[in-house]
Length: 427
Image (tube, rainbow, N blue to C red; front, side):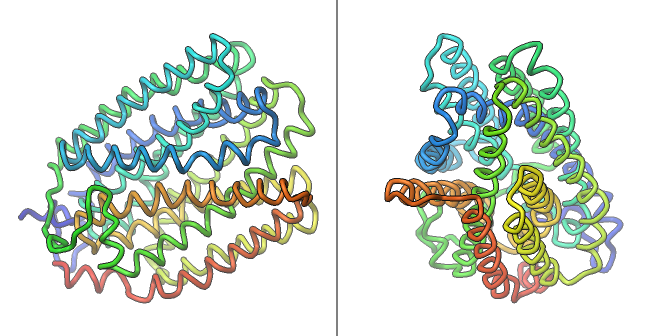
């Protein structure tokens, strides 16, 4: 088995520089693919939200968010079957193609006045981006070693954020003259260069192969049995669920207040696009500067503990002053850290694991866990509303603070074993 198949291109014990020289090419190609992916996502992120708000209003947001896990589960099942049938490289190409066609069909249905298509677009928006980007990380976690990842993961995210910045700028300036619905076509079109560059990365490094480390574990196409074999994965799934509770309540708060204060659909989409452009700029700073330095010189556990502690403070500020500014600031900080430092640090946790964990269990954790966390939170909001409870923005802030505290507790056992030590055994 080659070093790339084991997870460390050009590895040379005691020397990081040869690793980086060998690892930067696939990292750059995936970064460029992510830039096109995230640029396209910016065109559909705000668009899907605002089209749905226009059709059904903000009170229906929890309902559609609660339906997202169903779409994600079906997509993950299809992904698992494709992975077993086609292998990782062709599965990624197929995922891009299916996503692009689905987006175009949603656009056509919305233009024909089918309001339900806005709900379908909302679910597609939440599903395709996670499914594609987590396949990028499955590839990188099978290609880079832990020390390489500590230096390269941040810049990889940073290159992707450049696409987010351009996409946010594009939707900010194009929504009003071209119309909100047209933004969906930009998203679909950008999936073409996305697929090209990600496939180029596979052609350069070779397709990761099954290392058979979990060959005796009955896990099925979706990899569910791997959680029994590796209990730490359950804790990591719980961490992701906690993060998504925070994300959901802050999302509902920000867009709820924005809808109350800005009535015009196109203007609201422009403001939302500017917000996500700012998230992209802040994330790029964290990815290119903060993440490589902090991951290289600070203990991984300290980084993982500091991130939820920051969210506790920001959500406390939102609780004290529930305004559009405080909601937007708390949400911006959450997304910035999520896209930069937390993402770069979290991905190193997967590197010591087997191919099956990196390509199957990871998708359950980071795709289904992410969207199930959002959906479950939305179901809770719906139940409270149906019981006559008034779900205030203060209640959202308290929920976010509690979830960040749970995250803080759970991350301790998850990071008990340093990835480098595990990687030594793996090598």
